[in-house]
Length: 238
Image 1 (tube, one colour):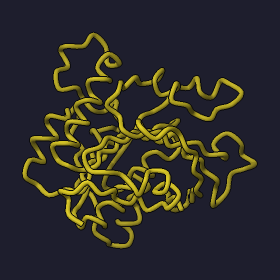
Image 2 (cartoon, rainbow, N blue to C red):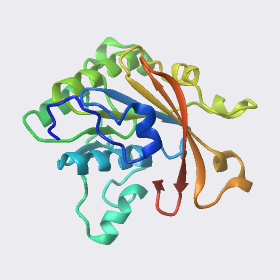
Image 3 (cartoon, rainbow, N blue to C red):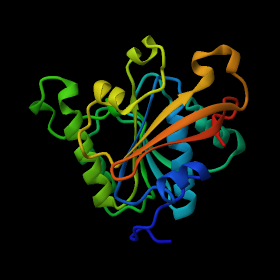
Image 4 (tube, helix red, strand yellow):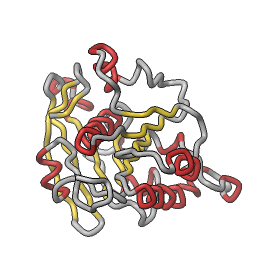
């Protein structure tokens, strides 16, 4: 498989690959959305690792210089590499306030298999002076990430945090409307993965492994719910 074809690249989770038609395609933008602590970062890194292994090229991970994250040894999903001595499947950028245009310039001519943005809120728009508030820039930022995916011809994955209002209703399963309310992204997104974990809200259902629902919404493919298991000790989906 070469990076210049349009064949889907497996995510490593068979039910998710089935729902996606084989995996994620080069040149597309995928958003992973959920409440904080739901496991979006772990899912993005796990998918990125599988893509990197398939393409035999490292992925590029943007952590955005958050004080909450130390990409070398705090991201739980990367700890096993540090502990085992295995080489990281990502090139990590921890610089704050990068834009999609800056990422494009940094990666021009460099072989990467995918781009993972750990949190959209840590990214900056290409022209921040155009917007009165951060939320006004979200649709443009999604367009910029989609352009980045096309220029690099790789899948781009970006995590988005859903608002607390999801937890204030009787059914906290996330919906596309929740994403639109929390972070309106417009029409640039090709695929949305909405995360819901039973044990997140119900302590009686916590354990290892823990049932997780991923609602897959594609621009031309409708919605499908797939299920997997979350291993909190390994920060890994199976």
